[in-house]
Length: 207
Image (cartoon, rainbow, N blue to C red; front, side, top):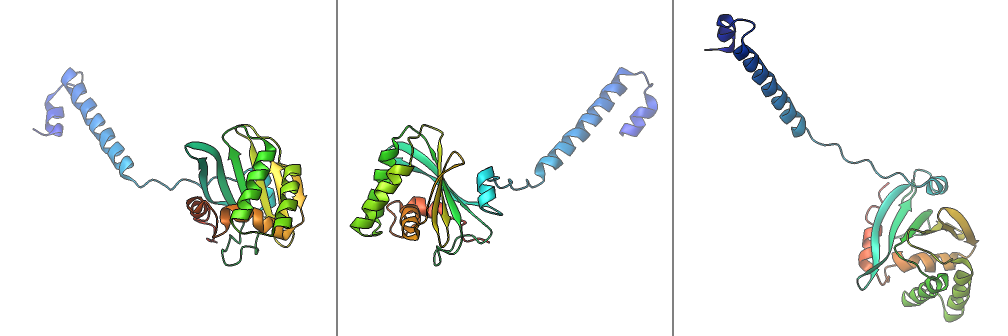
């Protein structure tokens, strides 16, 4: 017997009628829910840049990110932000970009500077006199950091680099060779962390 025929023979106050109608409504709701869940999900929105990055890099977007670890210890999480022009490996000086390091532990500023100078030597940047000068400059700039602090570096084409602690300017270094050496720690083909370099440059060139 169809639902319509059953409704013809059952009184309006019938408990059975109420149960049939309730079941029919539930079936319709379940069908609608299945249809809704089958629809494709929209891709997640790209992360918005922090305020100071948006001010320095118009149309800033996240190019890539990754973790730097020492043995099993995570030292920092690093993100690369680029502007409208992106980043070209064949023309690394062509446009501004920013590297943001969020530290996972407390570190002494001088040790950060010493480690950076050591990495500059390993990638073959500068000569011994330049690296010594760069080392002293970084010691004078880099502060001690605690877990959660952000130390950021902005590459300035034709000028050099500007550094920030938690979004506030620390110093500007008007030395293009220093800037190339510093950012080369992560981005140069000779970087000692090739997997991290690949992760940072993942979408760097995309316009």
